[in-house]
Length: 503
Ligand code: NAP
Image: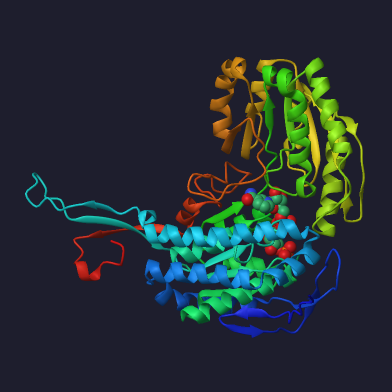
C-alpha cells in the first residue's frame, strides 16, 4: 500500500498550507514534503482552541467518552497506512508499530471508561453548618475542572503512543481541554494520518473543530511560540532533556507562568544484590541485554546502568551481558540526529576516568549495535556525566566495593523514571536500606524485573524527580495523568443551578 500525504497542517478543522516546506527524513521509502509551521498558524490554532473550550469544556462525560472511542475507531480504520508510513519514517518494525497502535487506542478507550466512572473529579463536600459557633460554616463543594487549551509535544521514539493522539492528548481531551499539537519533525506523515483520524472523530461527534489542531514543525519557533501563547494553559511534553528544559524555562518566564509537564530522560539504574547476582546472574545478564537493546535502546525506560558488588559474580555477569549484547545485530536508529547524539554520548562515557570498554561496537550513519562499559563505584561517584542518559543501546556496569558504596551510588543518582532491585530473600536487609533512597529518586521502583514496558492502567506512575520529569507530582502514563489538565475549583454557597456538571 502506498499512502500519499498532502503535508498540510490541521487548524481547527481545515487543512492549510504555508509558504515553505521541509522534507521528511524516512529510514526508507519515499521522502515527502510537509508545510513548515508558522507563528501565525500557532496563533490561529490557539484562538480556535479557546473558542472550542466554551463548549468542549462543558461537555458531558458521555460525550467525551464517545469522542475518545471514536478517535480510537478512526485510528484503527487507518491502521495499515499508519503502520506503513510510521515504519518508513522511524525505521521501527511493523510489529512494534502495530503494538504501539494497540496501546494508543487502548489508552484512548481507557480514558473513556475513566471519565464515565467519574471518580477523577475527586468531589468533596463540606455541608453548611449555620449553627456552628463562634462562626457558621458555609456550604463548600470542590470539583476538578478542565484548565482550557493545552499544548502537546510528542517524542520521536513513540510516534503513536507519545505523540499526536498519545497519552497527553488523550488525557487532555478526556479532561475537557482542547489540544494543539506541535507535530514531530521525525514523523510528520504519521502525525498527519493520526490527525485525520481525530478530525474525522470531531465531525462524527459534532464537536467544535477547534478542539484539535496539528501544526507541523520544520522550525523551532513553532514550539517556542506555542508554549508562550497566552491562551495555552499547560504543556504536555515528551522528549529530550535539552529540548524540554528550553521549553520549561520559557513556560516559567511567561508573564503568566504555566505548568510544563515534561517527561524527559532517565538512565533507569538496576541494583543487583549479592544473592540474586550469585543465583541468577546469568539470567539477569541476558534479560538486561534484551531490555537494553530492545528498539535500539531508544526507550526512556531503557536500563542503562547495572550496579553490582565487585567480585567473581560481577565478572560472570559482565561476561554474560557482553556475550548477549554481542549477538544483537545492527538496528536502525530513529533519526540521524539521535544516532549522532548516541555517538556523542558513547564518546562522553568512554572518555570517563577509569571507564573500561567491555564490548566495543559500531554506530555508522543511522545504524547502531550495543556498547558495554564498566567503571568502579568510586570513579562513577566522581563523575556526574556517567549518570546521564545515553539514548541508545549502551550499558554501563558500575562495580562497587561493598554495600555501603552501593548505597552511596543510589544517593548520587539524579531523578529517575525507574529504579530496579534484583534480590533474593537473603538480600532483604540491604534492599531495606536502599528502598528509602530509591523511592526518593524514582517514580516507579521495581523488583526482579526490567523497566522497559510501561503498563497503561490506574496504578502506574511514569514520571519522577527532575530530570526524569519537570513535575514530580505527575505521571504522563495511566489514568492519573488526567490530573495534569484539571484544577480544583471550590463553590461556596453556590445554588445548584449554577454548579458545573459533576458537582
Ligand atoms: P526532542 O528532540 O526533545 O523533541 C521533542 C519535541 O520537542 C519535538 O517536537 C521537537 O521539535 C521539540 N523541541 C526540541 N527542542 C526544542 C527547542 N529547543 N525549541 C523548540 N522545540 C523543541 O526529543 P526526541 O528526540 O523526540 O525524544 C527522545 C527523548 O525523549 C529521549 O531523551 C527519551 O528518553 C525521551 N523520552 C521520554 C519519555 C518519558 O516518558 N519520559 C518517553 C519517550 C521518550 P522538532 O520536531 O523540531 O525536533
